[in-house]
Length: 366
Ligand code: SF4
Image (cartoon, rainbow, N blue to C red; front, side, top):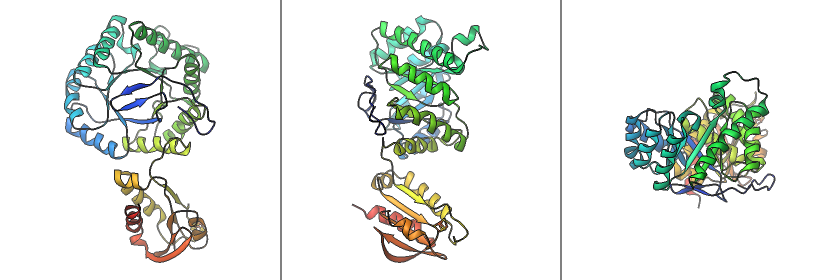
C-alpha cells in the first residue's frame, strides 16, 4: 500500500477475497469480526448487515464447532461482503467452512497442530480458489508450549512471531499455494511494530494489521491508532482490524478514522465540533452524537457526506469564525444557532432542528 504521509510503497502481492483485493495497489481495507454466536444465523446476519452499512468490507466470524461451520452457507447468502472463517484447533472445521462457501480462512497454525492437517486445509482452499490468513498471535506461539514463560525481550518475541509465520508460509508455498495474508499481533505496540516491520522486510505477503485485545473503546482506540497508524506511515499494512471491547460497528468506525487521518481512505464527513466551555448554551455533544449515529448507520448519507466538512460550534464568540472553514455548520446561541454556509451566515435554526437541517443539507447536495 502507498502512504500519503511518506509516499513509501511496500510492494505486496495481491490476494483476492471475494470481490475485494488485499495487497498490491488495493486501498487498505477495513475488516471486523462478529461477536454473535455464529450458530445463530439470524443474529449474525443482522450484525453483519449493520457492519456493512457502516462500511465494513470484510467480515470474520468465529467457527468454534461443526454446527458453526455448517451455518456459514446460510450466513453468506444473507450478506453481501466477503466472509472469513476463523478456525482454531480443528482442521475439519476449516474444510467444512470452505465447503460452505467461505471467502477466506484464518488459521493460527500454532493451534491447528500437525503439518498434515494444515495441508488438508491448504488443499481445500486451493481447490476453492480462496486465500488463507496465517494469524500469528504473540500469546499462542508454538514456542510457548515448551517455554511457557520465556525470558524474551520484545525483539525476541517479534523474531519468534516472524519465524513461526514464515515457517507456515513455507509449508503453504511448498504446496504451491501463494494466496496468503499474514497477521502478527501482540497486545502491545512495541512487539506489534517490531514483528510487522521485520516481516515486511522479508516477504511480499500482504499484512493484516491489528493490535490484539486492545481493550476498551478509548484505551483500545488509542493503542490501535498508534500501532496500526505507525506501521501505515511506513507503508506497511494492507488491511486493518481494530479490536475493541465494543460494538463491532465502532471497530469499523475507528479503523476508518485511522485511515482517514492518514489520508489513505475517505469515509463520511469531517465533523468538527468545539469542546464547549462556559459560554456554551446548547448541547453540542448531543447534537454531534445524534449526527454521527444518523450518518454512520446510513450508507447513502455516508457516501453523500464523504469529504464534507461540517461544523457544530457552541457559541457565536468563536463559532462563526471556526465554522467559516467548513462547507456548512452551525454556531450556537441560546436554544438556537446561526446557520453558516461557505463562511456566509444564512439563517437562524432552532437547536432542536440542527440535526435534521444537517441531514437535509447532506441529502440535497449533488
Ligand atoms: S466555540 Fe464557543 S462554546 Fe465552543 S469552546 Fe469555543 S468559545 Fe467555548
